Image (cartoon, rainbow, N blue to C red; front, side, top):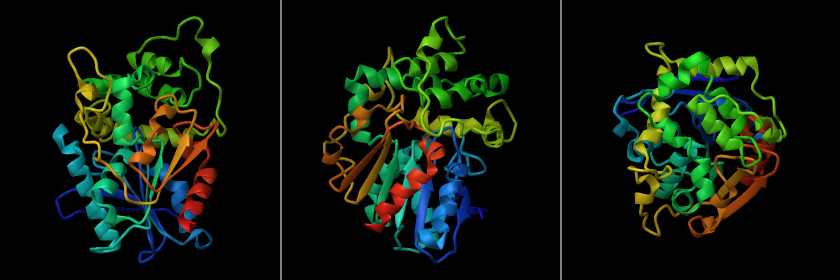
Length: 338
């Protein structure tokens, strides 16, 4: 059973949350990405709350800017320092001052927050689990040096447009639905097709020859789940795509995107070599059919994550949490037991 509730944090931010499991048990905290919400974790919340899987207290907040959580209008409110403050305060509320999570589990933009928090405040957690979310050091490197990753991430420069919300909301979010398919497509044309969809371009003759190879677990986007996404993206209905603004502000606030004319973006980022070192046991689950985040992002990761385990998952995509939730749960369960 999933409970829904609101965490009122001491610095004035509220986070709408979903949870399973009894208070007082060891806590697993799950952070979602874009363009999702806390409901993406429901199956794993229920799984790990069961006694036979550890009987954890499992909590998934909607991050700042998502669903019914606080959504400041200022893009500067989505810088890492503010996002880390939210999650640290939620951990204190769940675990008590000085308490620790059993593990922080995160995907996509939630992973960006998790990498930052684990580096800055490692005592808040015993373990870290990352699912298809690049470490800041390897992401900056690949965006600076890898034409393939620059091309795969080109969609990010659409998402920072001031009119991105309105464009994404057109025709019942017609630009967003293909995004779920393209980010899980194999083959070199996958993200080009996603970028074309975001730009509103029609499919070109010959695109069918580059049709994606379907991953294991394809077809997870049911009508019921589609309705949940639509409700989150619609938000309060005050304007088209109102529910997307918070998530888009993460992209707008970050320089980690491909450089282009007049915008240095990642090319202007110089991270100290020792920055973002993770002194924790860390499991990275990487779906190898993710066409937006390429496997080169794993290269050299052990330099910053000495206690690293990597599990590469073939025939799985960026949306592996939906496609193969039982496999993801089993991998996390084994990691927690070691």
